[in-house]
Image (cartoon, rainbow, N blue to C red; front, side, top):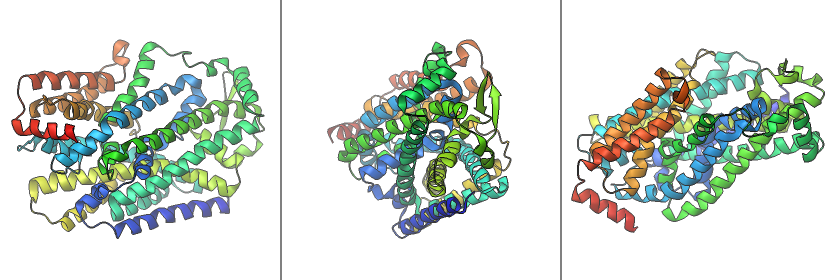
Length: 503
């Protein structure tokens, strides 16, 4: 790595730590630590939600998929854009209001217990367990990705790379909690946005302009320009169904809860969706025109960046398609700009890890420690329990990620499906249907999570090749409604629902 690139990278990491120290001084109680005291502006909330959502998938996974298979790999992006819009349009405002009506709930398990007046604590404990289980592995997969980026960029060992990336992310999350995570996500979201604009524009210019770039792709492989080439109905349905997962992602939903006012939702939605759609286009174009670049440009300089090119079906292809964004960053730009672009990739990874650590720590502090063991715990005590939980969960994730060949990446799709199926129908019904009961909510959550695991692990072939989120979401919804119809919510629960509706 060039010295200017290295310096730029280090400046970015130090900046993230300084934000953590600044947020530390503004964090005094548990509400501050896990929800920022409900004082996020629309811009910070929108970019924080987007950055924590997209992860390295937007800069590594999606460009790699489009690079390898063409526009047919973009269907997931379409599904996610639709799902994100519906989430902002219908869930954000209602959840912000209802969590305040339901005893000022500050976590999703907290909201579910208060929404259904569940004195047994079953909803809180089971939902917290689901969050901890999925997020521990989800976090470890992000640490693997971050370690591989550090390893390639700094030419250090995998273990050293893993600990460097983990220590920086853990430090600012540990110190500043939700405010640090949200502010760093805001900066990281801007970095990701600029990177996803700059890389495809410079690549297209290098190829001679838009028309020449499109013609080059078509001449190499015309199927790359066809969204339906080689994909069946189940594949398209499964890809679009990723959008269903948004309704149940705890690390995204808490951004809605943290808005300073429900009136900020329209502005936040506009900012968030604008960021997301432009980012998706940038990622798709990076992958699409990466095929033309690798096959038409002089690749003499690639060896110096550790990029391996192989021959496949008469085309030159990167041995690892997900390195196309990294390749462009290092070849097309000045070392200082390359450092910023590589920092943007790390931003995408870190912005998701920090959100997952924070939601997991809040589940331990608020939903286990306070609810079960120390009901009279002081706010300062709970903040420190949350901080210790961040370090503990991160350590477990690091141990899981210790082997560079760890098979945890598949659990990313499990986690997305698991949260979407367990919490998605439950969140929607709890916000819009006064007839849902505690038993219906509990049954639906359990059925959704179990369906995802069973469908994904034990069923395959034919209709069972459908993404497990689809049956998980559907079965959870059906069970929640059927079980709820067998009971009746209390008058107090209905009164709270109607109060939330009036606001």
